[in-house]
Structure formats: structure tokens, C-alpha cells
Length: 256
Image 1 (cartoon, rainbow, N blue to C red):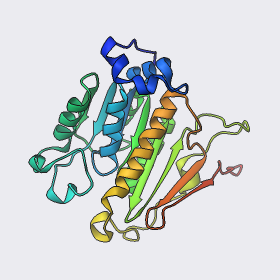
Image 2 (image 1 turned 90 degrees about the vertical axis):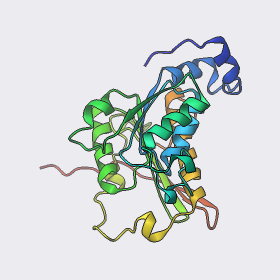
Image 3 (image 1 turned 60 degrees about the vertical axis):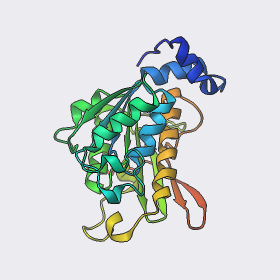
Image 4 (image 1 turned 90 degrees about the horizontal axis):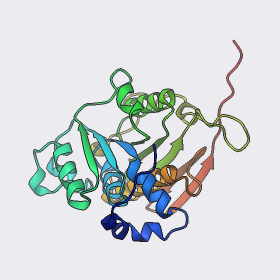
């Protein structure tokens, strides 16, 4: 990823970013040059896509194979009532174009797996995973680790959510490799033990909070700003309005 020059109207569009010392003109150029994969155009993917588009990420690649339904609209703010029955990627593309004509939207109407996702992940500078199942989360973690692409991974349920950033191919400040997804979640919970949003319910704004935080982490990683959630796991409870962060590290593997 190399810095991309900004056009005159982009300088005005992103003026509030450019005056931030942590971003500045060089950071905005990095955003314009970036190619980010968003996995899922649903509850989490909606605010991620909207804020990355508004922030000026040059290419947003979105993978989703679903269509818009009426029950989505309580939380999936990429889509509106007139989009019911459309492919989510089509309404997402319209939303991105409406927000920022400088952003290219690339649609991939596929369910990503370790078998079909390597080339797409490898073509991107960063991945944000807003999927709603553990199989996809593990697959994206494995693909990103193999391709050496940073991953922002987020999840929600009811009134709560969680978020972390993964770059296990890098070393931390202590010189040790940064942790993997499996260091945080060694294995997926047994099938049926974690209810879906359809079964347990979800406060619509929960996805907005977590998705916006995920977009913020993506921007920080692209601009090399602040302290991303590398080796830290953020847990948010909106019922009590509590934000807690725990540190986790690479599990030492026993010698064979």
C-alpha cells in the first residue's frame, strides 16, 4: 500500500481528519490507497462500511451472499425499506456511492471459507470480520494469519459485544509474537450452545456501537495511529454501559 494523492475536493471533504496530528494528510493518503475487506453487510458490517466510506478508504471490498429482509432493518443501517428483497451488496454499493464518490465498492457475493478466500484476503491491506458465526470467524483468522493481513474481528449478542485486532505474524513490544484468534478462543463452542440473534434477540444499536468501534480500529491500523486492540480484548455491555478490556497473549506451544 502506497500513499495516494488527494484531489482538491478531497482536501475539503477530509479536512477534519487532516487537522488531526495522528492522521494528517499522510494518513488520509494511506486511507485512500487502502483496500479493506468487510466480511458481512449486516449489523456490524453496516456501520463499518458506512464509516470507512466516509473516512475515504479507497476500495471497500464486501463479501456477503444474503438478501435484505424486513427483520434486518432494525439494525442493518446500510439498507432501507425499499431494499427488501435486493442483494445486500447492491444496496451497500448504493449507500457507499451516496456517501463518497471517491470510494470504489467491490462486491463478492460469496460465503468466504478457507477454501475460497485466500486470494481475496491476500489482495487486501486489512480485513474487518463482522460475520455472525464461529466457522467464518475461525476461517478469516486463519486466512489473515497465513496472508499476513491484519484482522479486526467483532461479535455481538443481545446488549453486548466484543472486539479485538489480530496480527499474529508481528512481534509485540516485548519481542514475542502477537496472539492468534485461537489463543483467545481455542475452540468454538459446541453447536447450539450460543443462540443466534434471531433466537436471543439483539438491540439494534449494539451493532452500531461495535461496528463503529471496529471501523475506528481499522482506521487506526491503516494510519498507524494510537494503540489498536492488539493483544487486547474489548468487551462492551450496553445494559450497564460498561467497557472492559483484558489482555491476552500467545499460548506457548509444547515441544513435540
